[in-house]
Image (cartoon, rainbow, N blue to C red):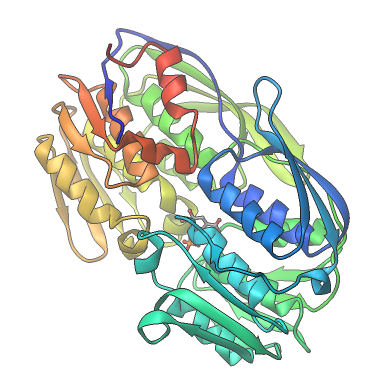
Length: 436
Ligand code: S3P
């Protein structure tokens, strides 16, 4: 177990390069693995989650080379796809580690294959709901079983014949959508998905770039079965990782930060919209399009934030950023109300319970119900020792709290950050923000 102690700096100035986007990296590896041709994926996300995806694809017979980054930027991953039918039966259990995206997207790839496979993960994954994918995959004709009556991993896939379905998704989840789109690619007819609200659309964008027949019409996504062709993917920086620095720059009283190369796809950039609602001084520079994904450098300055209501259709567009937004809310003037956030209860940890727990110890008034959380901003956070709940985003959020708290914040189990941002503590060190 590692711990890191964060101390409040007098000034916070400088440049950060956000690590490669986790969601885009998973998709770049998986979609190219079932496509025809060789693709080069640059700035592949560095964390454990995306490594699990590569390992699993290799166990299914895909030839993947991974070369470490030279200097800054993530690794290069070369994927040699031979079409969807080239996957073969793995000779052991497939291990997703703590990665929900690997679990759920790989399930779409494994469902209905003419071979048996078993997919599982670590103790955080083995309590996360899988019925949301297993039910529709079963309706599509896949033979799938999960522990606890189909609710939890491990999941066993044992063949079946995939047919297209029309399906109303009960939750606005990009993992569910992508799982069904991936299965739908090999169905006997089109699959039509109705979403309750928009969620990240990296799968749809990338598939289109690969020649896939996938249409989006409002909240409806239709995928027509067919082949994909390999495409090179320069992975943009992860806005979910950038968010820690963005919030740090806004809440620290003497800060100006430039966060370079951040993916600002509108289905991911809800955190920017929310912070602007709260009065953030934040602007995009050097906006560009990188292989179908919008990217910008983001400049943030110390801001006087005020409370806001963050709910409804905005929530899926910032779902991973709520733990750090709660810190912005604690430092803001007035109440910030997060509504429709029940999905936070089934992330790496129950992020509503975790936030209420540590913030209460830190002297912040927070109330919650099953699907809401209200933070009473007082502009004050008490330092101390807080656990990370073995959740990467909780660990990094606590570090941000330490940049403004009255005494230092010690983050227990700080190694959790490596899931998506293994260089996080090095970046903190580089800025001189760690004790000792
Ligand atoms: C992800 C989708 C989100 C997000 C997760 C990554 C993805 O999960 O929380 O970190 O890459 O599709 P849900 O789609 O289940 O909300």
